[in-house]
Length: 159
Image (cartoon, rainbow, N blue to C red; front, side, top):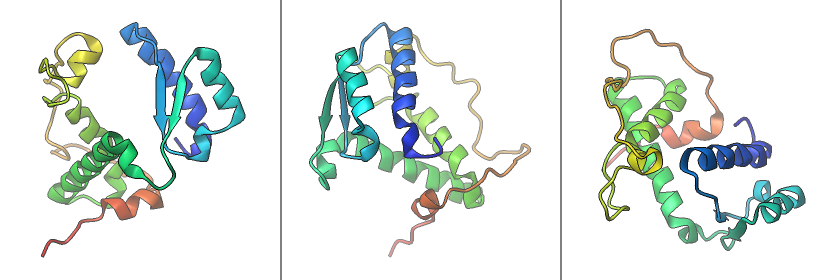
């Protein structure tokens, strides 16, 4: 996404993909009070689809703890991959996508039946053969950097 104005359209795309791939319907959208989720058109769309919209109280990220924790884990993983590979911050996008890709293919305690997130979504075990070492020997092409993520992905000092 280039900006938050794209959220309603991206949600509609995700909803169509989720419904087609799983056969399940989204019943609730849990979001913060970001303006991108609160437009009249988007609220009407959700109502028309029978999707309940639950918003957190402003400035209380703990109410959306699972999503916040997943975001933090993904960013920390991406930061670690960039640092270990000795790459520039311009590779943050690829690192975040890779971190999410891996996260969806490793065991999680969220599901009691011990299935992978990928397996739960697609109904089959993932093919791990395409996995390669992040920033291994290959041709790299830097992607444009967005300033908001630049600060989040910089290395952190301990001690």
